[in-house]
Image 1 (tube, rainbow, N blue to C red):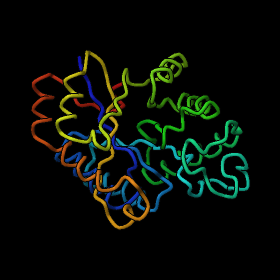
Image 2: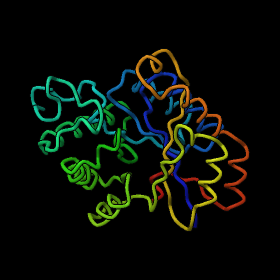
Image 3: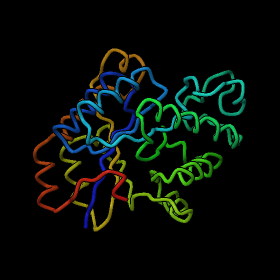
Image 4: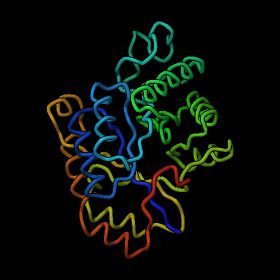
Length: 251
């Protein structure tokens, strides 16, 4: 059996991303989205999904980077949020992070998600793949294991380590549908390369509203992703190859 999870990252970041993700689910092949619960458009995005797209699986996009404010008290996060803010990106994270701080912050983000959605997240993944950080990965895995949640494995090594810890994760992670690779042609090529496995395709659909254009270098490309994800030829190829669209609960 070939199964494909098509997960839209960054849900809740802006209203335009929310709309583009819902569109890529209703008209396209997106099956799952991970919520940036710290962003201002996240609560409305969750409500929008529950109302308009009840079959869209919602996970948590754990945010330990991005330069914003954490969910928990910054004074209690001296290594994770020095100066009161999270690191700008994964490269800016220090080599050592206190694991109690990571546990506190991720637990608070999970609690916020559950408060807004009224249910646990379908799975966990991480913004900027910060879960690959050697201080973050064991805490990320432990929290998922405690809650029985599937997780994204952003690299083959991470997949081996997570599965060894007893966690459910897709067999393969596809990150090539991005930037210049965000085309229907490339999407068809990625689908054509699937084997008898469960794979996760990461995507970032959205409409570039003013907030996104002001705060992200990856904005206009998101609309192209919506178009490619909704291209009829892509769904036709899935049907011809017998690929089953799935969400993380299929693991």
